Length: 607
Image 1 (tube, rainbow, N blue to C red):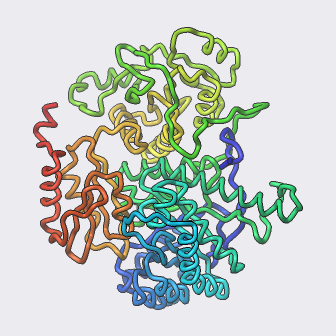
Image 2: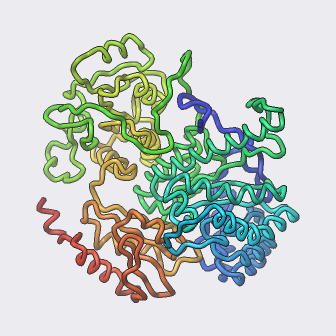
């Protein structure tokens, strides 16, 4: 299976066009930027104002939650109010548990988003072994519940997003496919097949997860599976021959547009880095027709980040490769490149060692007076003293010489090469003997931008993408000139990519009308109380929709259970219920202490 045209050249995936109101998604149209308002859907004036604010900063599609039929019915007034003010931005209704709410919402909006893990399906964390007959019977039940919405959308020109979330796969999917990217993809394809049987094709797909590795793997697998279905359909239509890739998508094509997002990315630098890794990596491979950056901040702050990520999608390729080598054997499941262990100036790296953080001699000297105060952001190796071998990965003689050596060498791509960074390191990893560790760099020359946000997004996209590919044993950030900020950026990229955990890890949802407490202030209070807990992962969820599932790999969870009430989780198991929100942070600390994960801040500072 292949998920992109080439890992060495940017080429956008060909897709059919789906109209969302006045906005065309897919095909040759621009990559669209969208977001979601955060207020109560019953507050008509607030919904109108937040939508206007988003449209004013360039948001092209706005999503509004509709958790009940009553909320869905109020979309009529929200849309009417927007159109009366001359705002024609398309509105998407976000539906999870209630098919009835979807049917009502579809009367008023241009697009409906359904989550196949929640829509007419169940998630009770039950272990049930389904026979093939039982599984088929469940699909028949889902078809019966889903068909009316499909028929209505087809008759009234509504688009639909089939949006799978890693955190809300149904018990049926979990028990057949497990908590995997394959389960995510199959969950969506089951619903797509029902829609296609009814002659409905105005579909857009998404595969969101809070873990960038899972998200990247799921989207790659989705793109590959859609391509497989396309080939099968083309083979049947052409009597066994493949559909020529140069032709536009056929009327019944499986080449549906794809919406990208890292869900529950969090806030601040961490949320932007995690989004750049997941979204940026896939955009670099040509996957993605519309994106949303999900930050635990006011929605208007998401738009500049999304727009910047889209601007980074520029043509770039390694040309002149007669037979480009494949990149890794595991594009749909993470596996770190197998290297030998070595030491560089006394610091072990490679093999299963921690991925190291390098810096330049100039930055080391600039920080020399406070190295002992940098704590977890301390540089580990000076690149000029590392003995790293710098080569052009197209230089076959240099590659052959390295591969013939008996000793292990640290290798990187040479500065000044006229190659895209991600493609260059992929080519190096493909041609270099696996035993040689690789030093990743975010740039092959001078800083790409004087702006910190741009430097952050560029470094996160490039280094994070490669780390999620399993490539890299050390990293060097040079795109950010400030010595301290460059080190912080390097460590935060490693953390967001799941490559090196050195601080508390937070999974925080971006807020919406379903949220049962103020996410921004609550997240700030939880961070203030727990930010010193190195290696502890805490999930902060505004409601139950994705909470337990997204907390599957978290140590502790803080979830809105009812207005003003919070439920606390250990992993995905609820253990404390209906705690008043003004007590919940203290009770979370007590829970962490009960499970032996708590240390006092003063102890951490002494270390």
